[in-house]
Image (cartoon, rainbow, N blue to C red; front, side):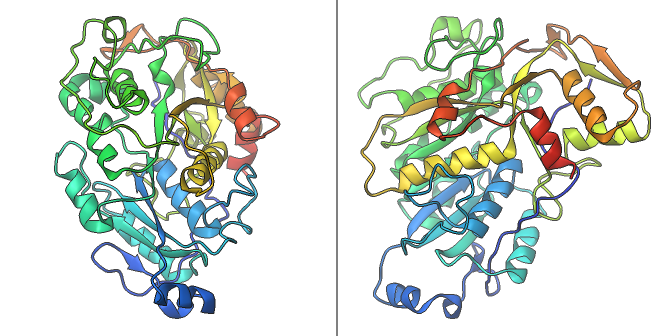
Length: 420
């Protein structure tokens, strides 16, 4: 059966607009000469830029996000719910620094450097700096981050994770270390946390984040839920992060955060993310196919018989909606005027409940390909030794209302965006 990922067959028609000198130790730094006269004056008098840390920046969502922020700047409070706010972002003269933490993707810095050399930085951004070798399984990760961006940042977009359920099941101790990085809270910044729909048990349709219980069935889901609880708990709470029902037969490591989450943190329970490849030339990982959708396309065009699960359902989400939601909550986190609120939870999904088989059929239909090579198969309850929730489709009314959107994109919109 096919392993999913979340890109597709054409690159986005936007690039990170950066203008820079040669990279320093932590990446490319903007020439002062490329700033506006007012920006030069602000830098000269020592006005403080706001610092944004993006973990997992070399991944699929991370690369799309860097491109979007670099091209469009940081959305202001007046347009944060507007998905087309690129031109207006940053009009309040606030300046920013973006720190791109990642572990070890060999092509990431070269791709970033190439984009930097070709395009100008958005006026609100002073620099975009990669921070390599940020390994969340190493307790020293927090020191690597602090060496690059100082003791505190203004907002954290936490995308980094061990996201393969199979790997997490076989390497539980590493999964707990990477997926529940409590020391991030020591940076004293709001955290926009990309969690997962796999915190749900999968025994019903359209889970609601504020009404339905969380009972993850595998190590991956449990580790992601544990960090949700880190962000949700009060500072004086020292009880276990997960209940016995949530843990099942698994054991919970001794994880005790010493710092409560900063106000205006948010948890986004993301479904399977689909869309075009990233704007980075070599993408976010090695392999013949940069995405699940491109794999389907290739198999269809070569009429190669392929099996797709028909009995697992998710509310697949468009990368455009993921970026829009992330930027919306980033704006909230950075706002000087926003009232502090406790950590909130949102389902981040699309408007289509779909199986992998449904996705393959939709690709075939959109590309007008013969679908006879698409085979519907059931995934066993424990496929490859990893328990998997059968239906983790989600109700997305709450995030739709928050973003002031008519609806979240569905499979048809994803196909149009991906296969232009």
